[in-house]
View 1 (cartoon, helix red, strand yellow):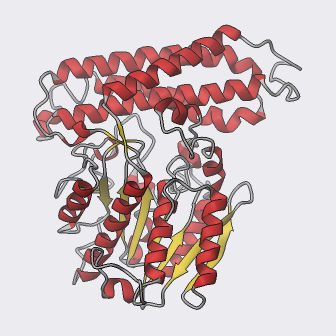
View 2: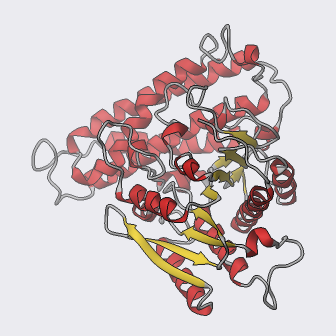
Length: 458
């Protein structure tokens, strides 16, 4: 397997080669097309009586899933043959009696926008200068929330596949940029935490003990989180996401268990530290204040370049405006007097503001800022380095050189401070893949061995 991330074309080429090398056992097909006309490909391996659906690339900036999907496909295609699975990775009926289906990249349009950073150098500055992630409404794992709105083509393709397969297991492969590993489940799966923690320890990957994505969720074991019922606390109030409107929960009608498996790019040890934080309220004040100040500065820079924005900048503008819209609300929620630190806060709900949780918030706040700044920088380049594109207020707009310099310096300094503040350490892609690969196999084994799954959460 490769030692680095793969582009959309590289994923397709390697899947094509694998299918050709294993005729009758592996099949590559298209299940639909993206908004830009890119084929959405599925690689199916095996001939078992049950189906497993693995979805890679649901978030455009998380390329690890595609590489893990190929790792799994190679493993399964060789299963039971000379030179097949090693004794270190278990092989049993939960594999041989299943057909595995790998969506190689659910958002190929967005993934292509991230290809400028895939080959390195792997630094925060290089990553966030070329980072792209569409706005929430354009992320294909989420169902539309507006009445009468139709799902995106990518979402429709996934929904049709779920209806076709009715899988006993769906794994969504994610790659958090900074932090640690964790798994989110739509149904309890006893024993998974042991597998997750053993694998993470082998590859020196921290396990998150209070991740931003599952901050309020029940945790049956270290690094494992059960998705809440619709009426329970889900995400921070300022965020648009809600698991009830996700494609993770949708196949429950078929008894499907969904596991969202996160493997980080940069490790931060403190996300796994459950020791009490020495000054949680002081930390919340610092996080909240800096987020407000940085968001205010970036909003001002956006207004300076807005007259030059064109249709070409629209895909970048949507997430920028979304990030800037949620920053003030999150700053209020995270303030010492807000819902986290005030009366009735986490401490009163037996969810302590320990070192892991505070670090998760520090990462989330700084990530919001550098992502916004990186996207703004790309908008600036598109707006002012494409003179043939007419500006919104006329044929051309003068380049505000001071904005470019200010934005460039701001992003450079914030990336450096972010990297130092959280003590980030790069995890080799091979280790990210192997950890995610083993975690998916553990989930598949435990889910298959469950005699009678507990009642579906409704």
